[in-house]
Image 1 (cartoon, rainbow, N blue to C red):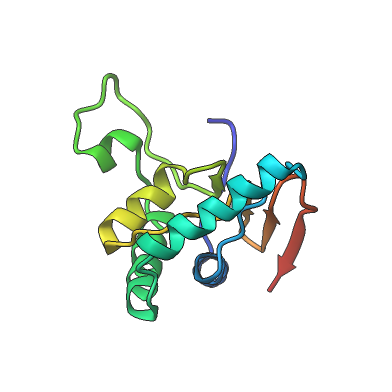
Image 2 (image 1 turned 90 degrees about the vertical axis):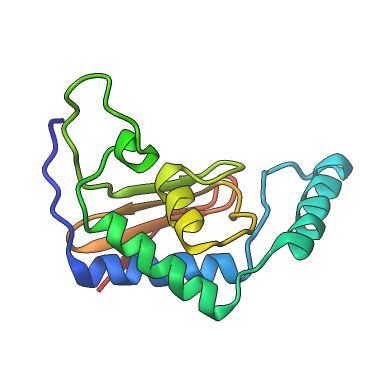
Length: 147
């Protein structure tokens, strides 16, 4: 794959806590400042209020599942229970993201935990062995969190 990354449990723990916080109060910022954009963001919040089950207990389960996935070498096929088309090399995931829906690692953790919620739009995270970088919202600045 061309890169070398080994997860640091302390950094992964921090990344998991950040995601749990983001899911407690998801932000639906798609960058559209028009009335239509405002209505879309408002509607997303209303839908989330009806489907959201992000209690502390469910978010803790999500955190456990996300940590397992981030600390493990895994492929998409493994998560889906499918045989690989070729011989893929499992790898550690250190990039998480949401456009309007979560990527497959976040989705898998949510599904395993029974979490049903809207993820914060346009949110991305990069995890290194020494820090976490986060951008939350359309064209939001990235912040580096060094532990």
